[in-house]
Amino acid sequence: MEMAKSLFGTRDHEGYVGREEHTKKLDTAASEDDAELAEITESLHLVRPSPGGPFSALTPSMWPQDILTKLGQPESDSDQADYRFDEFGFRVEEEDGPEQSSNKLLSIPFVEDDNIWIAHLEFSHHKEATELTWDTVDVVLPRTEKLRNMVRAGIPHSLRPQMWMRLSGALQKKLKTETTYREIVKASSNDALMTSKQIEKDLLRIMPTNVCFSSPSGTGIPRLRRVLRGIAWLYPDIGYCQGTGVIAASLLLFMEEEDAFWMMATIVEDLLPASYYSSTLLGIQADQRVMQTLIGNYLSTVDDALKSHDIELSLITLHWFLTIFASVVHMKILLRVWDWFFYDGSIVLFQLTLGMLKIKEPNLKDLENSAQIFNSLSDIPGDIDDVENLFAISMEVGGSLSQTVIDTHRRRHLAYLMADQGTLVGNPEATPNLPKQQLVK
Image 1 (cartoon, one colour):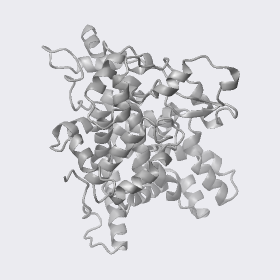
Image 2 (image 1 turned 90 degrees about the vertical axis):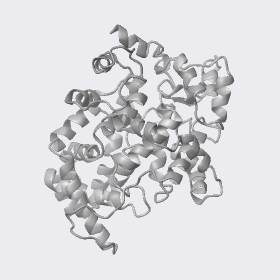
Image 3 (image 1 turned 120 degrees about the vertical axis):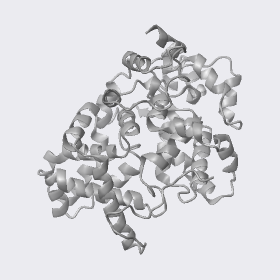
Image 4 (image 1 turned 135 degrees about the horizontal axis):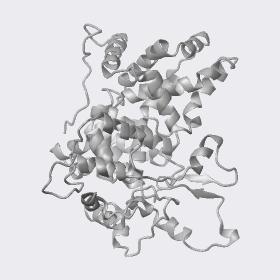
């Protein structure tokens, strides 16, 4: 594996990413008006998070230097805060202790072993005359059952930014598009636009418990503003949808701004169906009906409970789908969910939802009324603390699902939804006349 050292030789895994790579990223940052990046670039004394400590899982340019500096100084008892920060920058209250749902997750050390991934990339490296670097790794990795199993087992955190870009197709989109991110940022910088005003109102509400997004001076706020404005400009039929905010913010914790933007574009264009985030929400409405159909086919006990108590499940699960589980599961769970999602796409949303409902299924018979059942189902994502068990049950219940089956159900439900809204449709089993979002600028 000597060749692989050239790929990871600059990464010391202290804080998960090495200083040399961080400096390179800062030097090539696309956004000229990013004040916090300029400040970090000018600083010769970057304060680094301790391995596994607060902020250590963040991309280095998101490290909050003021807080890291304060954490590195001795403080008196009277100065100690009643909270601390986890490796993702979320505030953890000390006085009440961690919530029950996250207790197990908080106690699990955030470690990684990238040897198997380095070996896989090295084995897949066909350019024998060149060194193995990210520039020489395939833009789109060959799809194999081995790679799928590796993805489900979890991508090493330090490799996620590069692997997510390749698995999702975002890197290919970034390299092939004629419109650069710099041009998109410039074109979407008009403060007077209605979408810009909507975004501005929401910026501090999207991820208020994370230090990177909790104040106007947070390291993530200007980036989030630019990414959301860029998406709204690029896809005018979508504009700004609140569901995209928490996805973009979560991506920005681990990826540089331009890559996070192209990940968002790939989610909108390729990984999710059309009109997921449009004003009609037709795409996600159809998926909620598909989910109801699948529950009837795979989880009869859950289906009976929902029908007998007249519970509309979409009131619970629509938000799960809209945010791709961001903000409803613990970040350690979300990272694993997204590893899988960026490889297999939207079918994962159905498989995981089936798995979550299956986990709760035995408890439903003990609940007496619709309110108890509704609350119990709503609490499922926050109660998940064993991702391996979740994935195993999801595959046990929904492993036989195929994209063809999902697409067939989608076409049928979408046609009926469009008919209800007075949209002209032909055969419900045929491809509906619903345009897919594409790069149009």
